[in-house]
Length: 154
Image (cartoon, rainbow, N blue to C red; front, side, top):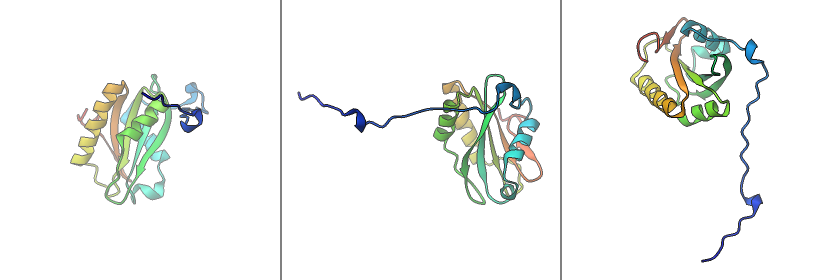
């Protein structure tokens, strides 16, 4: 058998970091779907809310204080693709204890599609394995919001 020799310069280095610029005590605390929807709405580009579908994730510490909001995807008029691997990579990188999902429906229809329901179940199951709680999934429209949690989907 021959020995394989590796040069340390041939292996890429992976660095993981998260920098919170706001002290934990000053970050918003979310207790209701209405609070979460308001924070997402304030973070959304108002010109895009009724135009193009996007998927965002709110990241939480153990005390339900917001660590940040991550834009997971920006799609087209009738859909966007949210990759669970990227969602959880971000949650793990920020050492999140919980996440809250949100996407918009430019059509104004608040009802979740079957694809919305299936994706939510898939992400919720993955969260259980990683001990990252999926707290809710909110659908935003220009006028209102729909909470999976409030409507018995969780």
